[in-house]
Length: 201
Image 1 (cartoon, rainbow, N blue to C red):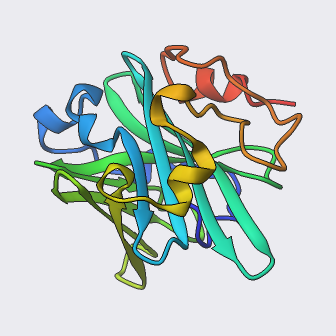
Image 2 (image 1 turned 180 degrees about the vertical axis):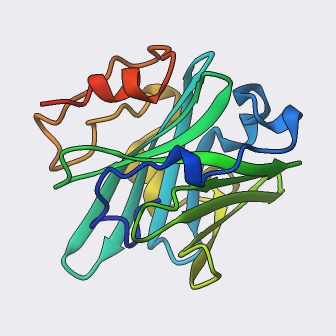
Image 3 (image 1 turned 30 degrees about the vertical axis):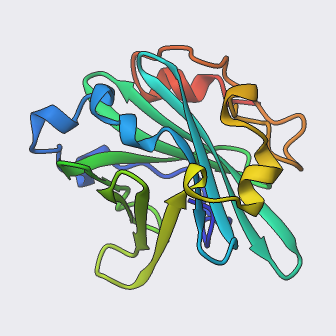
């Protein structure tokens, strides 16, 4: 999720994050709705997700701003029986980790209460071709984006990324992130600490 995460630094407080309560959605096998390309109606924001392994989805988020595109590398990873949403923006040495705190049918909520902003990121799929992303401070202050599958219409994001089958986004693919640490695509991790080892300079 690109907007306003650019100032993020790694800060994960597992003690502050309650475990998810609905077992069926704690597994990455329930996250198939994420796969594909998604764009807002005005073309100002887009995400693209591809499953690259049994426990890993990889994504790229792009937000168009006045001074150019802001790009973020994303991962949805299952480790130690929990799901984690991991975001890496250009300019930050390390990614920010959000743990799954709650979930339900077609809804996933991730939190990192030790982080400044955002503390909560929620993905909801109200329909097969609709994605709603809410980013806030954990108390309701933030913003929500409504996205539509690229397959439902021609979009700037689809043109930018090319056909979904032509390339799977990988951490580090984003413009301006050359030389950033790059965990192997599809590698399965036991826990957050092992994941972050691949990001250390």
